[in-house]
Length: 463
Image (cartoon, rainbow, N blue to C red; front, side):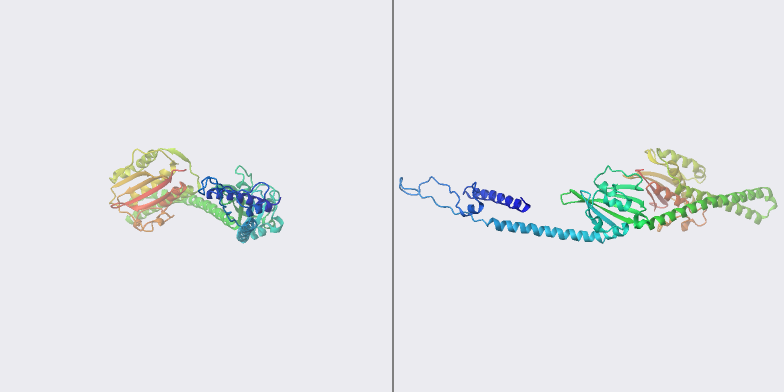
C-alpha cells in the first residue's frame, strides 16, 4: 500500500467518525458506515431513524406513521481527498521553495560553509568552501561517514561540527583551542591541506539546526580564513618582544652611567663645595636632581614593562595589611606636611595580586602628595564592593586636576597641565591602569565633592 492509499484510508476513517459525532449532536444517531457497505453507498442510503413512543393520532389502535429524517449532506469523499492532497502538495512545494532560497543564501555566504543532516549526510556545500578545499558541490552532496573531513585532513574522522551532536567528543592536537558558548562551538586551527596545499589558519564555528519544535535536525559549520590576521598578530608579538628587550637594554645601559654621574657629582659637591662659587654649587645641585629623576624614570620603565609582561599571582589576602605598608612608607612625609591619613576598617579578604595592589595604592598616594599642593590636608583610602568588583578609592582634598579628557591621564608619559613644575615620570597612572585591566577591572578619576581628586580602582571578584 503506497502513501496515497494510506492517506485516503485515514481520511475516510476520520470522516466516518466525524459523521457519527455530528449525528449524535443533532440527535439523529450514528452515521458510521455499516460493515461491508462502501462509503459511497452509505452516502446514498438513509440513516436509521429513531422512533418516538408518543401518540400521533386520537385512535389508540391506529397505526403510527414515523417521520422520515433526511440525511445530512456531506461532500463526496473523492472531492475532499483531492483537495486535501492538493493542499499538501502546495505546502510541500512551498517548503521546497524556502529550502532552495536558504541553500541559495548559504551558497553565497562569504565564509566557507557546509551543512549536514542528523545522519551526518552533507546537504549543503557553498562556493567559498569549494574554493577553500577544491572539492565541488556535486562531488560531496549526499555523502556521509565524515566525508566532509577528507578535504581538510585527508581522512574520515570527526571534526568540530560533529561535537554539536556529541558533546563528549574530544580533539587532540587538532585545534589550537575549542570554546563552547551556549549551543555554538568555536575553534581555531592551522590546516595545511586548504587552498590546494598552501595551508591557512582557520577560525571555525559550528552550530545546531533545529526545527520549529526544537528538535535537532542537523548542524552547520562556518570557516573563515584568518591567516592575514595571524601574521599581523605574530608580527606584533615579535615587535613587542623586540621593544621589551630594547627597553631592558636601554634601562640597564642608561642607569649605570647615570648612577655614576650622580655619585661623582655628589662626591664633588661634598668635597669641593667650599671652593665652588654660588653658580658652581647650583650646577652641582641641578646635576644631582637631574640624575635622580633619570634613575627614577628608568626604574619606572622597568616596573611598567614588568607590569605588562609578568603574569600575576592571584591569592586571597587581607588588603588592610597592604594599606598599612603604604601608610608606613609615606608616614614620615605625611607627618612633616601634617596631612591626615584615613583608612577603612575592617576590610574583607579579597583575591588579587598582592604586589599589584601595593603598587596601585603607592602610586595613587604618591600622586596625591605630588599634585595636591599646599591645600592638601588629608588623604583617605576607601573600600566598597559591587556584585562584580572590589572598589578601592584614594581621595584627597588638594588642588585637584583637570577631569576633562581624563582617559589621557592613564597613557604612558602623559601628565596633567596642573603638574607643571612637579617631578614625575608620567608612568605612575599608566601602571595603575595596566594593573586594573589585568585584574579584569578598570580605573576612573573624578573630582572630589568640594575639592581634590578621587581615583577609583575596580578589581574583579571573578579571578
